[in-house]
Image (tube, rainbow, N blue to C red; front, side):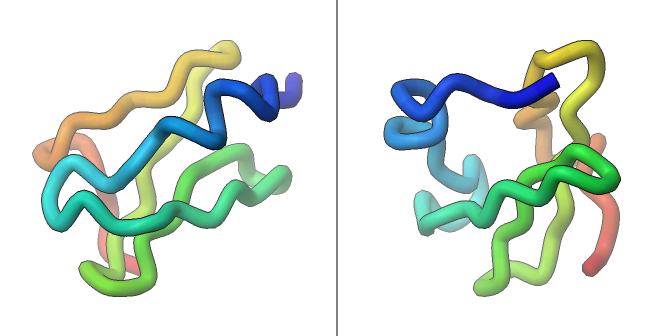
Length: 55
């Protein structure tokens, strides 16, 4: 599943408010500033700092 471009345009890292890189495999959003990976489950980004994994 792919996230809509409109959603990707407004999503930011909840920790630093920086840009996120969308990765297709595994589906996730990456913040390079904080070196965190936010999972996307069933097309829904999980934007909780506690749920993010280290890059």
